[in-house]
Figure 1: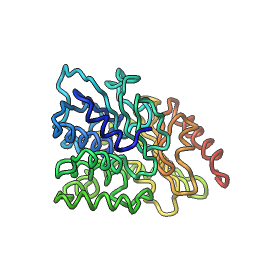
Figure 2: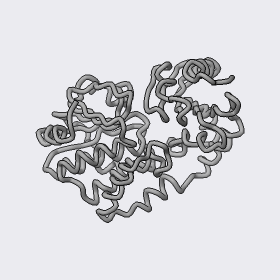
Figure 3: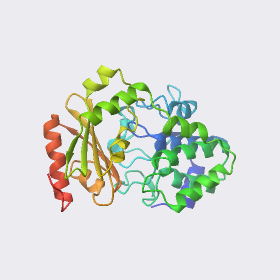
Figure 4: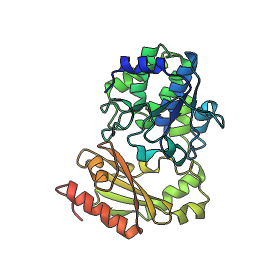
Length: 318
């Protein structure tokens, strides 16, 4: 496992670099990848991000300036905020087994690259990336804004339980560069489309409660997305809804990606370990935020999730 200093030295030795982000990219993977790309370019390196087909309208402005042109041939490949090669987008699958450096913060990280650096205690991969870029001497207003995007989105604007004193210290250092954080906060935490509100309304009306109302299942079938005319941008971070319900400490969001293919997002408090629940279903993540994808009819998927919860939580009822 590399140290920060070793990682920075390795990146200094790289050139013609392609940076990968995970499927259904969130602010952390986008912010980390783009900040790393900007830093490498400032060092005179040729670096690009592999286009991600799941990019949303909210994160696209931070990603697009760094996208690789068609035909770019990479000499080195780096992944950011990717715990397992199973989370590579379809257009990145060809790089499985060829990744030179993986930078991550998930407890379920699989050490799949030739060289790896992990900080599992970090609230966001952006915290680790901050230290790497600081070692490279590349903290400036451009990289700081992108790192703020990474850290703020992975902590729910510092509201999630993964937020630490270190998280705030890194954010303070980023803000001291003079960045304007209001546009990110407004876009990602203070604005919802009408279609998004319609999605949330249907999810709440059709929610199912278990475990003496401590656990909620929320559903986003393809038919709901189609009937509302919702886009991927409208559906971004829907998993945050369930944890806002009073009395709920385990929220599972079921998002249908294709017919009978369900992406599960599990958000929990300390009583339920989301990583272990999702690991039983072939996924992983963090103790309070994890996910997996299951291919089966919805009723079978629900039964499998309930079985995993009963196996993991000693006092689970229902």
